[in-house]
Picture (spheres, rainbow, N blue to C red):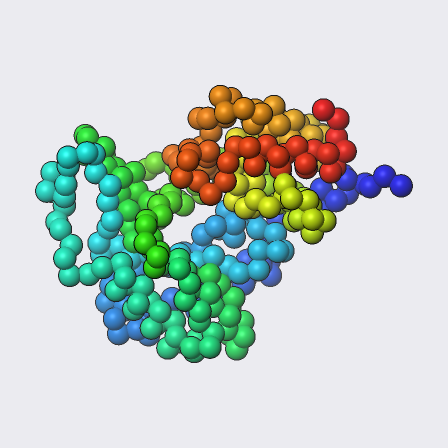
Length: 306
């Protein structure tokens, strides 16, 4: 008997429940309390916010931990045009406080509040499993980031420096009032959702659930991040979301993605949802070929026509 994909897709597309939203609120409150209880951090400018799939309302049940950003904005990390430095943009040099010190102080605050056994330090984030307070979260230490252009304008985002080195930059949303009014990941996703009659986020949830089901069935092509799936859906045209059924919309989105990812030339200018970082840049942990393999496998898995 053929599977009723329309029924599966309709269920998968549903918005996060009230319970999920309440869980996010509980986690944010707990992290804020931990920071307020820290002698080192309570006097600093720190913003705690939900990020990732929970903030962008594309989480599925398998997204077990709430992704929380903890951004210090007393100082900021920067990227300047070649040959430029802080003084060229009237910015002061920071010599008395480092990202490593911030991460260490955040670790002490979390351990003091949740207990050592509940807090595990990773290369990029802290994994918190605090059963007493019902908090499961990935807490990411961040600093404000500014990417300057020659004319002094900057794109604002967040940056982290992993313990093993390097620097990771993201543009999650406009977090501070003084940041330029440039739409970033959250704002772009919301606009796409509005423009597609609130179907974009549902589509992301469907494709993420489909990927998880395929991975459980040991499809090698399903071994890609859920974030990449979200970005692929964002790059599908709004016209792909106009069909009357979810089954037809999924077919339309997969069809477009399949055609456009067959080679580099048709998708080389695709961006992440922030519309800043190129989706298939050499620095990404995935490739265009892997994205195409997933789309091809997903297409075959649900049995839609090419």
